[in-house]
Image (cartoon, rainbow, N blue to C red; front, side, top):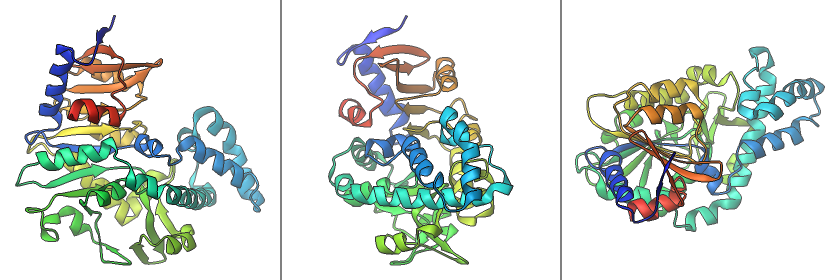
Length: 353
């Protein structure tokens, strides 16, 4: 039976202080993973809405071969969801993958554009987290590492609002070119001793990356992106995403550099995971390879195997919802609490103060 916690309880105060010290402090500065939970909280369409958009377009596609290929996957997608439903795509069906990529890029680009004013104006819990960490970080390490599989630019817009510089690996002004050395050694390109930066890894691409032939660039010009949406560089759900990630130099650099960071045992750090569904088995292996690292998870839905891990591993703290009740797993004990602390806005109010 779960222990009931209320705001103001001594036990909850103990948990709050432990989180600040073990997961958000200068001595255990976090590396952050942000999943689609944050995108959804700002209104960017998730997998369910994307699946509906793909169905609307592909089921009526002018190419009968593409219609047939999509129709063959439709039942699996309806039963298992978009990610799992597309795992059976084979290299011979690459024409369908390309169509899914084009439709996804255009759809997310257009939907995100409608939300820009709201995203930039809202005082979000994630913005408060960034400010908290900016004021917490060591004077010798003023770079916060964030990885996201999301295609949208919510993190970039929040950083703009807070006047926090973002290191993306791209350098330039209107049409920025990728340089892997920027991600690897940001201190050679930015004044990280005097200024706080977010180093952002996007291993599944971004709706402002364009590749046309041998030319690859980042731009935030909406008209350029709309006109070139067929060339926007993203990795869409399906079995081919790992192969694409290894072939494309930009994707490969993002994946390898962040994996190297979270595999580093030379210095202490924590992992802060927000709104991430743990659907990437390859990446999960890297995440869980060190069971002694402090890990803080905020997500409305958390996979059963992750919950089981947390109940055995005292270094994992999890805030989540199950059967319309809110729970905390802390030091392998499960607690129920009225407040939805998996919601980063509530988390910021109560944990960060």
